Image (cartoon, rainbow, N blue to C red; front, side, top):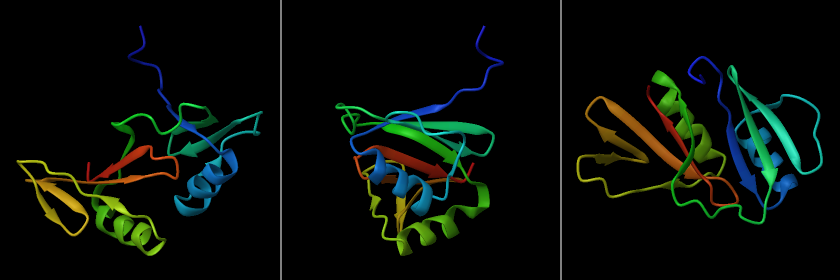
Length: 125
């Protein structure tokens, strides 16, 4: 029923102006439509990210959204780090940490948070 439909990430934030600055200026997303009251939609490849104001922003302790960036992982990590984005370091028993990138054999991933503490993930897939 839904397998042939596109999905979108929906990310709750406390302050839409702060979130817009992070998602548009730091991460480089473009608006995907007009801003509505407390909601902004952003274009991410062929997908849409909905960023909206909520009192529950930042309460999720798990990954909110993931981007497969292929061979650009290391350069994107470096660019984000230069922009002041701190990366999360987790204790995965089957992984080793190379700088800010967790390496699981051929799979590599890095995690960081938006200003509200939402966990975002990029990987080499």
